[in-house]
Amino acid sequence: MTEKTIRDKFIEGITGIVLAGGKSSRFGSNKALARFNGMPLIERATSVLGRVFKNLMIITNSPLEYSYLKIPLYQDIIKGMGPVGGLYTGLDTLDDGWAFFCACDMPYINEGLVRYMAGLKEGYDAVVPKVDWKIEPLHALYSKRCVQAMKDLIIKKEFQTIKAFNSISVRFVGEEEIRQFDPELKTFLNVNRQDDLERIIKLA
Image 1 (cartoon, rainbow, N blue to C red):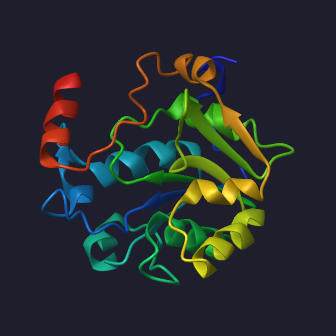
Image 2 (image 1 turned 180 degrees about the vertical axis):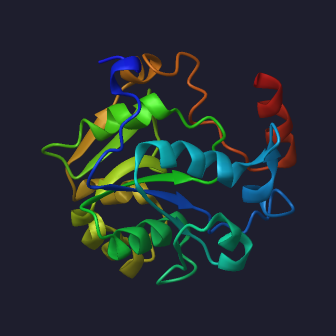
């Protein structure tokens, strides 16, 4: 399946969710609103997901900052748990059976790869990229069935999302599959500090 053959259609039954609940302490200001090639990072994320999924939402603990986007906003049900709390909130709030989650600070989200991953979900609870040893749980597809696994992590005060994979069925998407859509593996680059943003802008 090529990028050309899977383009230009909404995928039913999946909500696109952007996680924007971080404090951006290393960046020094709200990195979701930092501009990459003239567009705030969060708008780049919602723009790509909005071409793939009809339903979108943003998980954030500062909803006023994103109200201009006119996208449903939800605050963490249980605060202080980082991405695990965001995943739990998104899945618990979900009307659809599945959600595609991505972090707000990933400027190179690849539409073709997102569509490809969405086509792999049958028979699994999650679809997650894995390049060599590195797993990408914040650019991944999760079934609503994963709510309990995330809740269990919160109860244990466990901040590592990948610990949930011990109790769910995961389809890992390997490097060879990913490179069909993103030969340089830029999809998973993210912005933590100002110099990260400057370095990633140079790659563009």
